[in-house]
Amino acid sequence: GAVVSQHPSWVICKSGTSVKIECRSLDFQATTMFWYRQFPKQSLMLMATSNEGSKATYEQGVEKDKFLINHASLTLSTLTVTSAHPEDSSFYICSARDGGQWGREQYFGPGTRLTVT
Amino acid sequence: AQSVSQHNHHVILSEAASLELGCNYSYGGTVNLFWYVQYPGQHLQLLLKYFSGDPLVKGIKGFEAEFIKSKFSFNLRKPSVQWSDTAEYFCAVTSDQTGANNLFFGTGTRLTVIP
Image 1: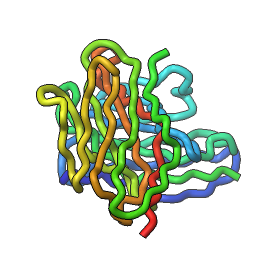
Image 2 (image 1 turned 120 degrees about the horizontal axis):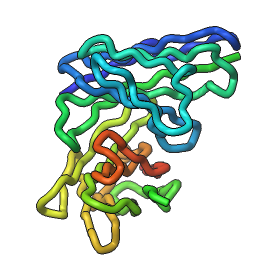
Image 3 (image 1 turned 180 degrees about the vertical axis):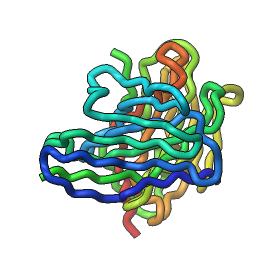
Image 4 (image 1 turned 30 degrees about the horizontal axis):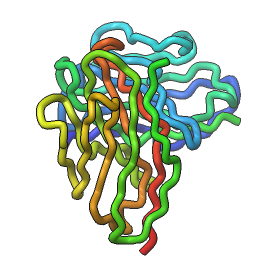
């Protein structure tokens, strides 16, 4: 089946620094990748949709200047949390979809736990 | 407001018991429905999905779900659970009214199966 990886799986950073999280589709080309955020004991919330070669589309309430998304190739999307603060501590999950057909399945990565001290 | 509701937050069952997890959604239009499972320490995996056709959908590991349009429901069932089914289960919906990209998740149901 389709595999999506994330790196790193866990990162601790100091307040004010930036952190980059990578999302890779390992055995398929992902024209669209998605970034979610999951708070403890809560559901996944879509942050943004990343299309290869174009600007990401951010959900309402998500600061695009704080959460920079780059989808430079069909197998890689990155999320950079700029000037991180403790309230940014969360579990970030990416997913990828092959092709643009509506309703096609998304394949999820294992997630990255970010802790900002 | 548009939402996906999973009313059972934590379900505890003994092995061999039957399982039914509720999922209700409030999105209009044409919907696609999904159940995902997250085993401890692992990533989300698709259990089953409904796009169209037979409203009774069979998934992996003996799970099935029934789409009842009139009730806006997509409940997950399994006739006999195993200890290995202990996990977090998420219902999710896409709607043509909110955009094909938006996969809306319920809050999840934690299932604990006691050997």
